[in-house]
Image (cartoon, rainbow over all chains, first blue to last red):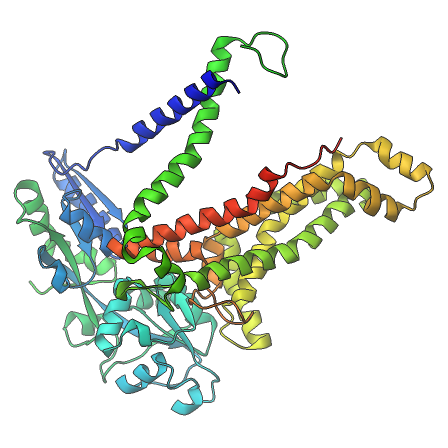
Length: 277
Length: 288
């Protein structure tokens, strides 16, 4: 190739770079638009809530994108999104943000339906997850070696689980790291020796559809959405909307809407528990 | 401007158009590479490149960034899958080219093409629901394992190996094969000693393509590999590949953790480059 054509090739490549780098900024400032990003647990709920809100407020556009609670925090901080969606309580270093709870979600231990054990104590679950108990026979069931299903670092469900049992992620000796709730459920449903933890809402929905898993009671409280609603169930997480400042105008209106009783039926339909009003 | 292949002057308009197409495809790679470098820059300064290779575990939210087990796991899954898929694919291509009855050959070819078009998530689901329980029942262990990943990945790259080998064998001139037969060689010898060597370079690039695909494959491997971060010394225990690691954690990562995941991406692209490099540095012999 001659020098000139190499030069023009580079020039074109540079042009493509410039065009692709100058991305469109978020719609934070626009009148009739709202944008929400973050937790993939909350995003489906927000999508249906936003659709109803748009119907009642013609001309309003609400953009919902999922990408994990971490992204919700980051986007709310640098103003790319009007609200970040975060499926856990804020940590100490995140207290520069304001958070508004919109619903609750319980996390439950699950085992295969073939597993006969009705109840596991807090200490037993800790021992299973730290590798001190490796066989179901220690717990009175000849089920073979325990297959411990855990979640990937950074996931909100994992943090709720670690928090509740007072575990550090480094101590956990897992056999399988699941990519998401459904992956964990399929793993447990397929292996009588497995134990895992998932969102109660998702698990109840799957059990209704005949998936062979069972929810374990925790500290003597049955794992059920009703117990989550009453606030009795101990392993809970909060679903939050976060922002850097007190919202005004449309954003304030939307926030009030999703926290009002008008949103309860949609929150229940997504297997979460609405707040008490 | 003259081109060494065409003796006449190339139409400026068409030249511009094709140059644009070439620039677009070339710049995609550059863009991706620059993007990866840019996003992983914070991790390259703090904790620094050494941390990725020397830390003894992967707990990025508590500042442990060891990635070596995942790099080894990526290589083990890919090489294991290649080890299974190459003999199988080559055999299938030879069968279709030289042994299959006239009516069967095109059907077989279509079948392999369809196999190539099956989305990876389907392979993953099949692996999770069929292969994993079978492994757990036969050999024990959690079932989601290096072995499951190798088996599923081998099936996924099989069509790549088969189709490229088949195309390479098809390009071997019939006159060579007839000449070999006329010299009195048995059919088996014609295939092994004449056809295969003549098609070597095509088969090789097919294998490289399969390696590149294997290193990058994410979804199916993530669903069956178990994703525990550990060195791949036991076929029956779970492993996590670099690509699965990104898919598992990127949605939930911020700051140093996020940058570390992008460094994993950089490592992944570099590994693919490392496999392709020999072919660039020592251009293959002219086959004809």
